[in-house]
Length: 230
Image (cartoon, rainbow, N blue to C red; front, side, top):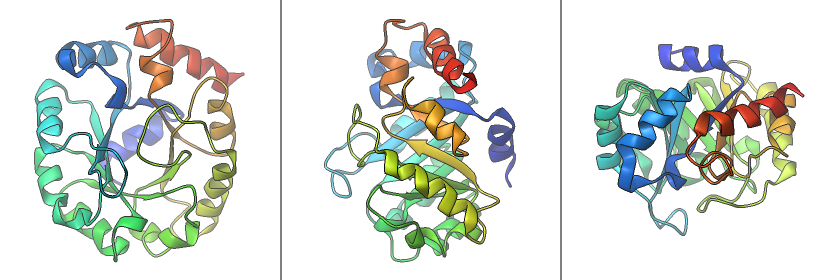
């Protein structure tokens, strides 16, 4: 397990803000606020408009963030043929690179490619995809990401059936060693359901950036963590 993943495991359960909904016009200020909020990592959703019906950002934003902060950059590639770009994303400053099992013909090879590039490898699975799809990659991964909404857009409703995937992953060879992450629809009503089933990293967008707390991200994250403890 790489040091970055070990640090996240030590911080778990933790809320990772998804920068998809942050103010990119004031990126430096946003990062400073998130640092002050004590976040363990920043979650970055890279979408190609092909694997998912939306397009976000690429290596340039990763590189810009790397210059602004030493916080762990948890990069989630929602893109086809991710193996073509792994080295570039690692060189840009990604600490964790997660690819989708649905997006590559050889997820296990992608895990090794990510490791060779100097990042921690993660494997992701969509809500409608069986966990068996990531089984060959799990022994080579350090993180397993369960999508709890259909990938592509923020603000969707949490799909509760995806919670069963956490138990399934833990039961598979290699699944006992990965850090478990969930992404999508996580808010004050759903976060405790995730952590109760073993989720260690809860990715939240709207529940951090679109709340009554405004830019007081510490209060938004604290409100979520209070639900974990309740």
